[in-house]
Length: 564
Image 1 (cartoon, one colour):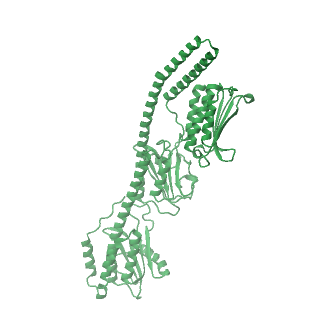
Image 2 (cartoon, one colour; image 1 turned 90 degrees about the vertical axis):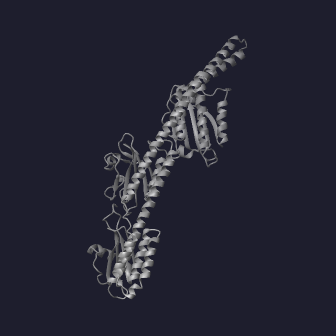
Image 3 (cartoon, one colour; image 1 turned 30 degrees about the vertical axis):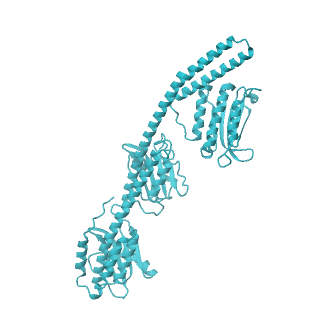
């Protein structure tokens, strides 16, 4: 951001004003109190536009002009510098006067005014200047008395213009300070969200809810129409839109900016991209031609590592991004990148702690639980051999079988604990996928898995927890009793209960031996109790084998908000 010009010493301003006002007539001297009062009030406006409005009105009233206009230049270093004026404020007694104000500024720019020359008839132009920096031009025209502007009028307006230049400079500095504070506060808020874990379950590769938080914040801070987060495309070399924040759906989510796009190599090299003419160079190629106005893209880089990019764009015809806004956006992106790296390191540490704990639990299970189960099984086998009662021998044999199955399940748990957790999606889908993967070890094959509908969005936490427990129970029954060769699992979030309510339905079907008549059904009873607790139901029927051989367990519960 360009440094603001230093304010001149008020004594110097007063001295200059005094030299310019020597020899004024009594009538003009009588206007000095109003001039001083106007100078005092100039700096009290809440924003730059209000200050300009006060200046133009006061100047017109001081010299009796019917119309006046102020044109303020863009700040030094702004992208639009040299392309028109940053702000124009007009004053006129009639609508025609106000419409003619723009001609005053055009004439000043065309003729090179303001200059040190005196007024020319009914037209007067003076610079708004502090030191060597010119902020804009104040133009007045049409004396109310029909006469020309006098030299004394010029002196009065120049004094006012000098003070106005100081007021505008102060307003710009205050505005820049407030703007910088907003960007800093925004960076702090995003950093806290990412490091607290509230923005997602993973850091860089897929930031969970992190991209949405960042996209919304950059849009807010840039006062833009859209905020976008782009992350590296897997294996493609381009950048993929991971989050979009806009008032209306833009259709940009998932769009890939290919490696051949001129913006991609620059962003991946850590350089910002400014798009001043979106018609010729749209933000995201053919997917958004003419949709947005001035656009800015900045890399999410930390050191030599580029994690992605932030993009933001204003409405068509919106003002360009200033030099200070570009610098603040780049600083914001750098802070976000640091937060992402720290969040990734934090999650790596948490993951290491989890892995160490899993390894400890696996050792305890192997060294203590399995050995005790083996000992219990051996004692029962010994008792079975010594028993003469067939009923007792049958019960002991059954208990030994149950212990053997339990040992196998514990060994499966030990094996799963010793493996690195697979990368699975977050939410209910990921939990179901983990259960199915874990069941593949004791089964000796991988069950098939199908999802129907928006499972993660529709199924609430409580229903999801019961569904996962029901799945675990059904898979355990299939392993322990069914002797199946094929299992199919379906989770359907578009199902309906018998009474028509929306529901989620879990189906676990196998081609095993089926449920024997008169056999134990404690597992099926557990499934039914879980479903009924949620207002649903559970049942079983023919399986996948030839002629309906095997078992198909159906478990369903209403969706949240529909009785769950």
